[in-house]
Picture (tube, rainbow, N blue to C red):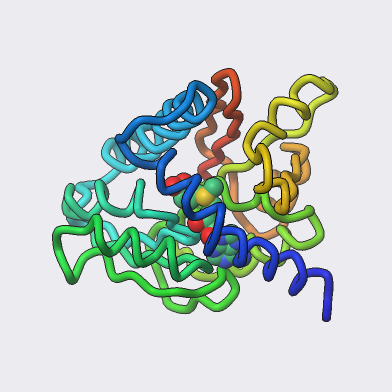
Length: 225
Ligand SMILES: C[S@@+](CC[C@H](N)C(=O)[O-])C[C@H]1O[C@@H](n2cnc3c(N)ncnc32)[C@H](O)[C@@H]1O
């Protein structure tokens, strides 16, 4: 078994079990603890930023979007409600099941269970939020490469940036308290992600950094040049 398979299996199992319970609550609107509330708020800022970017560029009803690693549909569902055609998938069937439960329109988004590299098709915009944190750079790179191959116009990714502050590493550890430490959090140097995108023929057009107390996410919008 390759290390990629191992990492993916661990992540899939996590998001089908304890991770599912934890993240379904964080990405919901019910009662959560202080740390989870902070992560919920930070994540919502990332979602709002992406939706804002998409809205300013093109009428959403003209947009075909792939939401890769869609979780419970935090991005896919509002995008579909705003008129975008959304194809959404996740490695965890539990997360996809929850996303379907939250969906109003049975035809949009179109949900499926798939890992990133199993996706096919052509999309104006491919988006992958807060997924790369689960993989080391050597595994993240082919994932980004595959997602880029599906994007005719742009690719939007987010990741936890690596910087010298050990306190940040510790805080990032708060993403996975308790038994959920079964998944590791990987921080990626922004320069490496940018280099990967450049080598794939993309240019970073916009970027944003969301930081709350326990949530850190660097967002890059890369356009095909
Ligand atoms: C932290 S959640 C983020 C969910 C969603 N992108 C969002 O921002 O709301 C990470 C998600 O990535 C999914 N995931 C992890 N590895 C994946 C992979 N290799 N392929 C597809 N989905 C993956 C997990 O199952 C989980 O739903």
